Length: 148
Image (cartoon, rainbow, N blue to C red; front, side):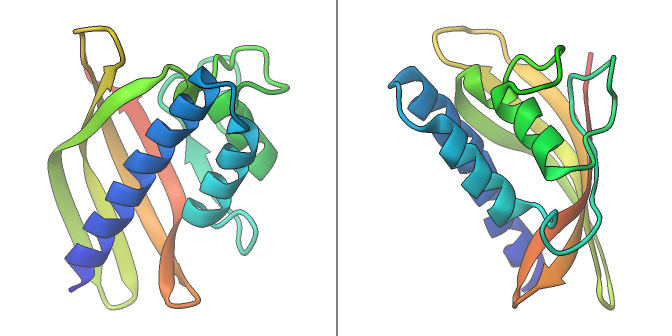
């Protein structure tokens, strides 16, 4: 059951990233979608969060809601290109591992990001550690990096 909750969450996360990019392409309110996405999937509003996004080098960590939004849709951090604005056509789970102990929930795996109108796929390794809030889960620790 707990594995299914994480799988459902990951599907929602993947779809959220794709929807932000689609809204950007269609001149929709992609920034509002990003705010909703962050609120739904990350625990910034309830707890401290550690976030190491995939493609960062100057400011490696994005441990505030504003910095996370900047990473996904461009913001105040100069190196941010808008990860979700690519746009991504598909995001597939390539490998998924779980660590489920008492109240501790974590997943680690790889995601395959395929951009729209491109053939090359970007493979990303991720670790998500979850916290339970109001009978749902949110990310408390997010670490991801490209796999070469």
